Image (cartoon, rainbow, N blue to C red; front, side):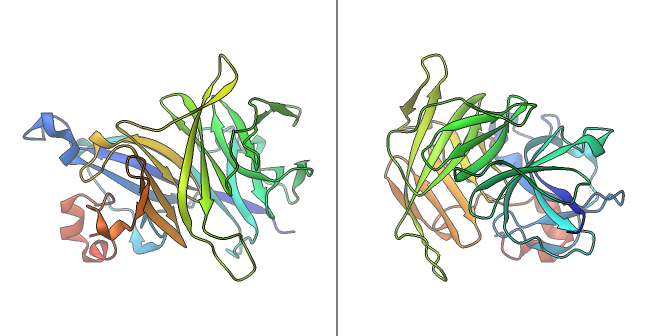
Length: 304
């Protein structure tokens, strides 16, 4: 097998500083969420992505004056490919420990992955083959939480992986069982979002999401608590990363919602109404700074 390399896809929040924003009390109108792909390999190439499709806009990330914005990293995900840039089929989700971007000795970094319908495996950064951590269970999601890799299986049982590659059970199963579990960290708390499909997965058929259940882990009591209102929070679920933001920090966002950004399954789920609507029916949350739009006409495509 060819040597595989990860590259990062990072969400950033860009905000105009208060001394630039003419009305600091309305910071939401001056914040944007952008997604940037970094190929690494020592080249330092960065590309701006459409957050909904992960497609490149055809040019590198704009050179911006950092003094014009406050830039905060919101979430980081990874994709994997070989040096020949051939796509790696079957790898669904990755996390890295330690994070190779922040780690000078990235050759010691371990890549954890979910692949081939929920198998859990790992390999060294420059390794060629995957080693199974557990082949007895199907896992739906993996994230970095409190400095460790955490996984959730199809029953909603959350476990973390210790340094000896053993799974340590962290939670009981969730009360109900949907089709796809997602792990989300929000303000230091751990949530499982359970996604329900309209039909079962079948060959050549891609089911659509019709509802969600949300659970928060009460870590003191070791039990799941059903969440009916996220307040100001927004959960964003995607293939390479899932995360939470405050709706009030961005223009056109509505709290108490789940944004689903999978290529073949997109929409906004409102926990208050229990309905999923198309992105086109909402004020679009993924806008870019006007100065970028004016200087790069291609950025207008698909984002307005």
